[in-house]
Length: 332
Image 1: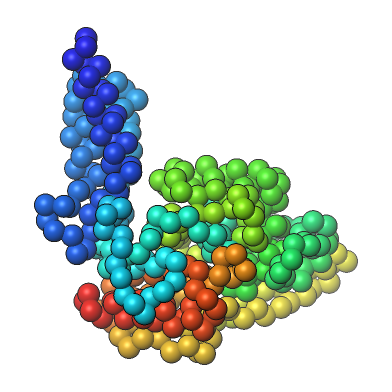
Image 2: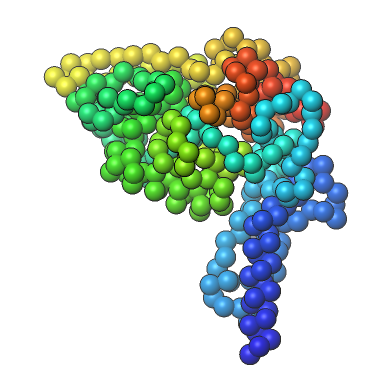
């Protein structure tokens, strides 16, 4: 009996170590590589194990994972708090710096909101704008300008939210999908933990600053990786403008065209040679600095995810992102 218990304890401890030492990707020596899938397959083959341990998920399947010891790449021109570049098709890290560092995400939060909305919402639903959504009062809150009593499909609300980054749209999405902002935030936290994003905590759907609202570059990678499975998401973030129709409280039709915050798509920032930026999400607050998450492809079609957190300003942000994206050409 003692031997069985020792085996279970050892396996449990080993699993916890795996979660703390997220393992090897590009640039790591072969002997340093560690695959969750292989390790968990070995664990689940032990017939003496408790059923709860046998059911542990294969966390790293189809994911890029890196050890803490390998997250300190040092390019002198990349001076933001955290940078991360991942080859999505090979699940390999190309560049990583401080990917587990706690940061404030600003409107990068909207990626998590989009994931929960796509997973639990129906894009054809009609959403009524509440008083709270129409009158969001937080300092610095960017708004689409929807008015109380107006109705809009969840699809158009999500499009406006992701392209233009309107925080009133975020409140409306949270209330419709979660029942309230608080319940939706609970759902955000639950879903992120299920993705393995253990360094995050969210209190709102839009990313306006709160001390208890934080994440890591790696956690945002995990949710962006999942979002790429949704065709609607990729289609939305790839648009330089989003046109939506909705209805006033009296039933009359209204429309707005929202311009993207992504300089690459607007054409005000040149894409690096050999790289096509498909889309992404920006975020800025005083506490978070300037942040950017990008989905891009190399000329050969290889997909990449790139992240820069806490740059000094917008110009610095896109300059650093271009530097990071240039690593795609070096890794091809």
